[in-house]
Length: 280
Length: 250
Ligand SMILES: Nc1ncnc2c1ncn2[C@@H]1O[C@H](COP(=O)(O)OP(=O)(O)OP(=O)(O)O)[C@@H](O)[C@H]1O
Ligand SMILES: [Mg+2]
Figure 1 (cartoon, rainbow over the protein chains, first blue to last red):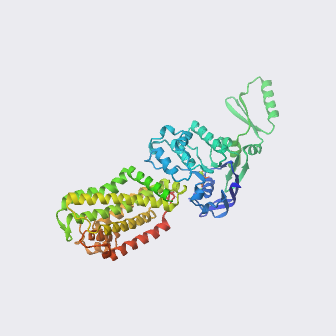
Figure 2: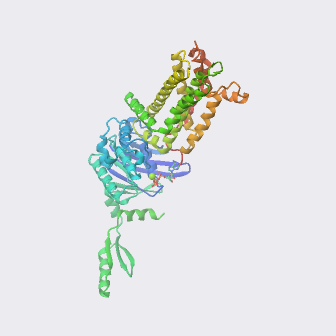
Figure 3: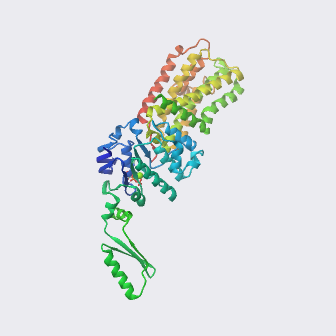
């Protein structure tokens, strides 16, 4: 059985048609990244799957349950990081964790979780004294406290410093090792590339592209060659990098000049993404 | 389910006493008023009973409205707007159990407040003991439940965190004055009296003051209970329709 199955999902806010017919299947144990520009409908989609928002049309099954009818036993099986963090500011970190751990039938060890997200040294501090990124880490720890099978992460690493982001990546990879299913959204393409087994890009209410990172990349055949001439950066995009590079370098050698800062780059996921969303 | 309820109750107690400002306004202030006003007119006679007993019943009623209506309403709006209620809604605690825990925690605060006030009233100002303690407790429970329902309901009328204490205070402070929590309303102009005659606190205070009079029990207060329950049911119906778990301010 798939962890998430969505077909023909539609949602509008008044006359604002946000999702017009989304299909998604996320097998158990997969890390799935949902990408798309601001306002594309990522949060809308994810909150429909979590049971927060009602859909207008389509079939949705999350862990075999219709989330619109999901009860406490359904919520015990999912973990949620919402896009904006929310806490009881006056509690200590450990009190906040214990409060939420108490809602779940089989909570995880709190110290271990705080260690995992890098908050072990703040355990007795008031939540309101945490920095923005630290609050976000607490959000992640809270999402994991019930030992969920399926984890929704809506921009979980926004505001993280590079080290914390790496740490979160490790945490997410570890969860995957444990067989958990993860649906995440992010605006960091390298994050999606690093973490996701599969990626879907949401654009204009539809899924515009979907596949493994490798599959998506193979759809762009352009290789980028960059160098500096007279202080200006020159960018050449080509489908035949060997020939083009040969031409450029032969020419340079013939003229006795150096191609400064010469760089040959495979297109990144970011290039693919920008290409896809730019021609609006 | 009982485990979840008691976990919530314990958590809410922790949250309440950590929130010093709210604890001051809903718990400490009525007690402070009792002491201050008791020193001023505890010895006089008001509406046929001793000033201190009149005031004690008034401040107990005020504390009920303060905790169960104002404190509960403001706290829930702030939690809703900050997104905490949404987070709770995503956890495996049934919404009704969560809210029951929050309300039960409020009742504990009311109970402590009442005990403290009755003791201070009696020993410091010579106020009477409630003549029928059981009726007194049942009346308090009814009053607290009704005001809690109204506290849930008022959240449906408030859209923002900033607005919450302004709106709630604008409702319950005038209500406390008009209902006669602080002073006798016997010489109030007719139009104010007409307003007072629809306010729920008026009816709770009539019952509470009665319960200090010899021989008066809850059985003597059918009308007062009926009016209170009508308010409670109306509040509950409104709350069921308009209570929200997600932030309302776009
Ligand atoms: N509660 C709401 N009421 C009305 N419109 C909404 C609501 N929530 C979202 N929208 C609209 O729906 C669209 C999609 O919003 P959504 O939050 O799902 O986007 P997103 O992909 O998560 O964007 P971001 O990357 O900025 O988080 C936007 O145009 C937004 O204005
Ligand atoms: Mg979003």
